[in-house]
Amino acid sequence: MQTLLLRSLSPTLRFARMASTNTSIFGLRDSSLIKQQAFIDGKWLDAQSGETIVVTNPATREVLGAVPEMGLAETKSAIDAAARAFLAWSTTTAKHRHDILLKLFALMNDHHEDLSRLITLENGKTLTEAKTGRKHVQRIVHRGKQTILHAVTRSLPCFLVVWYALPSLLNPRLNPLPAEEAVRTYGEHIPSALPGVRNITIQQPVGVVSILTPWNFPSAMITRKLGAALAAGCTAVIKPPPETPFSCLALVELARRAGVPDGVINVVTTQKNVVAVGKEMCESKIVKKVSFTGSTAVAKLLAGMAASTLKKVSIEAGGNAPFIVFNDANMDEAIAGAIVCKFRGTGQTCVCANRIYVQSEVYAEFASRLADKVAQFKIGNGLEEGITHGPLIHDRAIEKVQAHVADAVELGASVLIGGSAVDSDKGSFFAPTILSDVPANARLTDEETFGPLAALIKFESEEEVIKLANDTDVGLAGYFFSRDVGRVWRVAEKLEVGMIGVNTGLLSQAVIPFGGIKESGLGREGGHGIEEYMNTKLIVMGGLA
Ligand SMILES: O=CCCC(=O)O
Image (cartoon, rainbow, N blue to C red; front, side, top):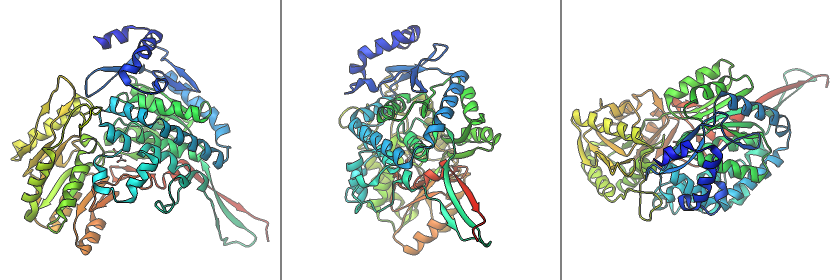
């Protein structure tokens, strides 16, 4: 009813209506961060058609607001704006861009509460998780570097921005990794094979970049790409997901306040017209790079389109992470690792454990201790105190988890806990679930569940489990727990994935080279991520003899 009412209002009236109720709906301190228009060439705009996309809260099914349903014309205009802006932005100094990123980082920190609240409202994850980008982290790493980094940089999206800006905000003793990516885009001198000749390389920004992001990390997936693009001197057209556009638009508003010039960042919101918009973003000759995070199926389509002009492509696609517990594992660490790895984001991250292989001697203990922990979860609206896990993003996600449970049970698995949707009138909730004795041919062993389903599969030997773990087309992340140093090296080298957690269930940090192999993707983001946004140019200088 509310949805229909919003749709029938003109964009201006709709905006006025929402703005008048923003404080109560969103509870933000700075409600001017709530943008219900797209952003092209420094202007907030409605769609030319006047059509809108309604955005709802998955924890309550309430309408949060609406954003424009843009199409091909607006996408072309955003790409043109980015191309015009590139002329000036690409010639600014790295120091200038670094200073602007630093201002953006400071603004994100100042508005940290509001940005986190927006994530919870549109994505459903708990406020604690929205604030840190992590769930249950304090428990497992509160002694380590990472917690201190969180305290300083507040969240993964903030840290991703500062990673491309200035690390000295972080205590260098605690964060010895080199940062200042914007100002460290060094070239090199290559000793010449010819007399009187010098070989030099320089790094130059690739140009206009298309950025297409998913809903599971409404801010971090944008900063991971946009931070690198801006630092390198590229300009961008972003297509945020229709489920979570408000976090993206709020970040862009902060970037505008930080002094990012008109046209450098453009946002096109779309849902119904996604095919036409995506095609233009990938096929336009003006665009020089596409960066996408999402499903492997869509990644293949986009990469095919980008191939028509041989663009650079970075892809972070689906995973089907194996999580292996050997007999010699530290069981406390393995349980804590499984909780964070499987249930972070209510199981909706591309690096979540999808198949949990447990060696036979410790299988029973692992299963019963994991079930005890999961029984303590409290699912509900992530804004409420005490809630540990939020909803799934929408009902289609619930259907997939349900289908994976039904398939495994039919093949002989048993439900240790959970197993079905709950409170579906209120929101898209699925009970955190553990299945035991899942057969190795269950559908979920071949397909990412993307939900709160821990599937336990028993194995006997190291050889057997490596074979099972690698028996998939994708290879993003993998995890295993063992205290045998020989095994640690053997298994780490043999697992066919881009990232491995050994005795940890949590990999994600701004500084790591994030990415996969096989059908999980191309390129790396975060650490080394800036390289994906730059071209190496060789200059051979003669006549110097
Ligand atoms: O879904 C992608 C995972 C992102 C992360 O863990 O940083």
